[in-house]
Length: 198
Ligand code: GLN
Image (cartoon, rainbow, N blue to C red; front, side, top):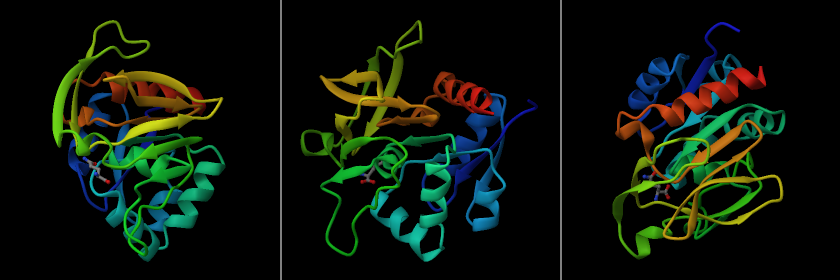
């Protein structure tokens, strides 16, 4: 396969950083804001940001159900932080009624929003990451953690005993922000998943 065409959901958050990271990891990367743009990509990255706001933008732009459908049909996806929250099948502390974060259901998992935030707003640390030789320097910003993993979910990393990186089939999620560190190994892993899924 030639370079896969990976979309980056461009509603808010680190869109440009993810596009640059994907280019460096060997993919062709384009922003996605509209239904026709979603239909044209082989895979999607959902950046960090605010999962409540992103949910309602997705709904207002008529992207919510098309994205749920593409994920159900096997779209490879990678979600970082707010993107991890959105890729869950169930969200705890999802926000106030009417403004809550809405699950897209790419991974059979329960994610707690702002989970670390109740202890400490932001922190960084070096994590063992399954399949990578050297630790990943991980930046957490009002980060979620995974409280329940379904039977097909593979845990890739933990921080302070909590699950912070997972994969189920072609869908990957991290509670931290690899686009911020210049380490492209997570984006490369995702591009390899996309190529493998094609
Ligand atoms: N706390 C944010 C949310 O609920 C996520 C923060 C982030 O993406 N850095 O969506």
